[in-house]
Length: 121
Image (cartoon, rainbow, N blue to C red; front, side, top):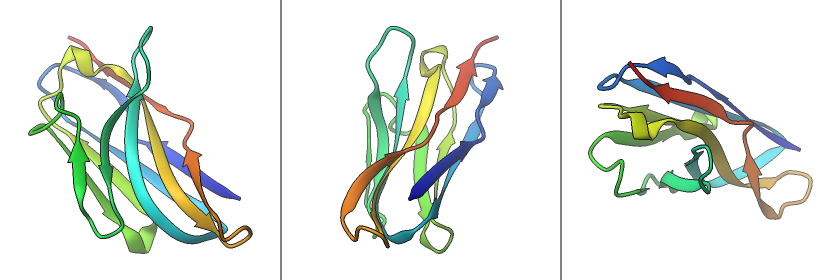
């Protein structure tokens, strides 16, 4: 079993910054791609950014130049540094990881429980 636990969400004023963290734990053999998604009220979940095991990154156009995804493979942790936040960034942010567990040795998708980010004055 693999668990993903997010932290770092909260309320911030427009133009402010937040840093999200997501730590993976459990019966992990290998973590492949890791990603952050978000879902605003009444909208579909969308990809914010993803990062490969070797560190290659990809961003949604709406966050390019403002958000930075990174990971610490030794800590099985992915981060999302969010700068110049806008009200439209308000959403529940979810961590996602493609993981091979020790039990199954088969890659599978895992999700965190989500953390609320609210950008408001």
